[in-house]
Image 1 (tube, rainbow over the protein chains, first blue to last red):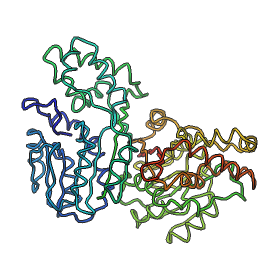
Image 2 (cartoon, helix red, strand yellow; image 1 turned 30 degrees about the vertical axis):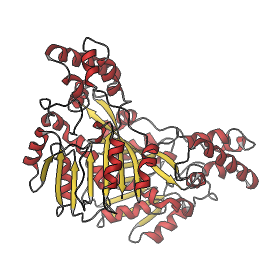
Image 3 (cartoon, rainbow over the protein chains, first blue to last red; image 1 turned 180 degrees about the vertical axis):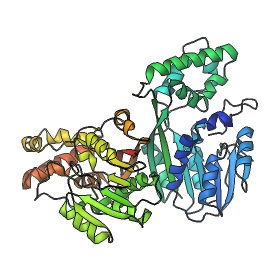
Image 4 (cartoon, each protein chain N blue to C red; image 1 turned 90 degrees about the horizontal axis):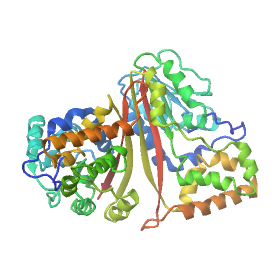
Length: 266
Length: 266
């Protein structure tokens, strides 16, 4: 979940530690995506937006003989990935312009393309660059309409922090609908499968929901703020989450998390 | 997808042939469910509502050493299953009252419990009957709010067939929400995971959508009707589907199909 999002400058790096707080839950979507990849012995596999290497590790497990390349824009993430996954090449790259080498069999993009506003065009370009039978496998959060994301925008737009956040362009656009991805990508494919999975993550309490998003969608919001204002924004967001999400019989909170999957065979 | 739905009498059996017209698409949900079952060497596995045996075949492939039992209420389905899957015991049973033998490690219910209006209670009972570590794995269509299902009810309620269909009790209730299943089942479990997957099935045209449902949800509707009236109802339903589902650039029609998955470890 690391890439070239426009708000991230050289000093505002992703925190691998915060992102990995919910490692089990965050590793299931790439597992589910990988389970649908119809390849047995790919020669060259690229993990796009490899982050701290949890998805790369899954790819190595499934394809131990493949040449494995991880691409990310975050030095912190790349360093974690190098320590975690040996026998793999990790390189810094910008997915807006990155192109695969010839004879790449699998491009795997887990929770990264949502950060590129232009990703439909990028996905079409990457798919076209694959050899016949090559696979583009993509997973993106599709949760912009969920209360947790809507509240980021609402709270972000209604406090002393509103100007700073508005300038940062922190909010993500809605994804295209499956029908739209179909019309865009199907002409470039021999096979295309698109589906959503809505996970229900069991959080210990409301604070757990805030912690979850501090490692991802909330980051561009609070990164735009300093010290006290950052704390005030997070407190206001926490209050809003507490009002929006009901508590189960055991005090836990269910965080519904819809994700879009695309599996395209060139 | 065969069980003890109340509208099915001795003479109105399920058609395995119609159901298997879309075998690839209908086998993916049980594959996805099975992929999440955290068992390595179960001794006894039961496929509840085994239908023509496509899910049983998957279970045999994953657990070749297990004692495998398939349960269904339809003689036609059971006969198909016996021919298809050797080394497995297939028995007629009614899931409203059926109970597992002692030391059953896995109860697998693919696309069957939606036909039991009382299934929340049944699932709780079955889960309680499992030994510690035993798994209840369930998948149900959760598509009652989709246009294809809403139109069955609308068209079914607004023609000369309305009385016959109303009497048959053909329409299914909405499923409980994940939060409600959580509150019901979590007290009986050591682990519970609930998720939805929304598949997008690519149909060749609108007629394909109608064919799909003729093998499942539409069956109780047209089974209540004779000859000409059945044809008229199906023609009216086809027209409604044509108006409700848009056509893609290549003439295909995308059928969105949400399904609920429950994985409970006793």
